[in-house]
Amino acid sequence: MAQERAREESYRVLAQGGQGEITEKKSRFIATLRPVEREEEAAAFVEEIRKKYWDARHNCFAYVLGGRGELTRCSDDGEPGGTAGRPMLEVLTGEGICNAAVVVTRYFGGVLLGTGGLARAYSQAVQEGLKACRVAVMRYGWQISLKAGYGDVGKILYLLGQRGIVPRESQYGADVRLEIFAAAGEAPGLMQELTEATGGRMDWTRERELYFME
Image (cartoon, rainbow, N blue to C red; front, side, top):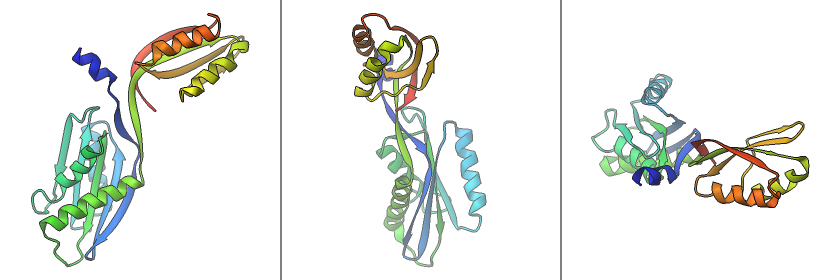
């Protein structure tokens, strides 16, 4: 039962990374975010940013991996303990975003911020970076192949559109073949509705179960 509940869960991911920047008491905080799926990818991303901003005093990082955030890592990179990596990580987990890494680069402006000021600045930098990103939802569901005659395609596309489902692939030959993704909890009812709407003339096959991006 626990496994079935886990499969029904959705989770948020970065569909596209981005960058944002804030200035706090003359210090620049540059947040760079990127989608990652493996720890090796996250480590390579952190190293890439460190090389890019080699002259910065700090390149702090945080990342969350796995559909339920099973693996998290963060680093203060020389800042006082708990003032950078942990606040950055808490922004990602607070937004429920998985499979994402962020590096915040700090160019010191000569004015000390204190521990509270540092934590706020690093958090705000990540929030600013997220504004430039695209976040998507991953849902557990079915990959379904549909086959129908041309006379029924209009009804099928109409009903799919009502549910916000856009075919991932379409082939028009002797008949019409569509590939769709549907959430596991909605798929059986959708297939019954399509079958009834086409008078049973539509054929469909559940190809596999998977997580897909909405």
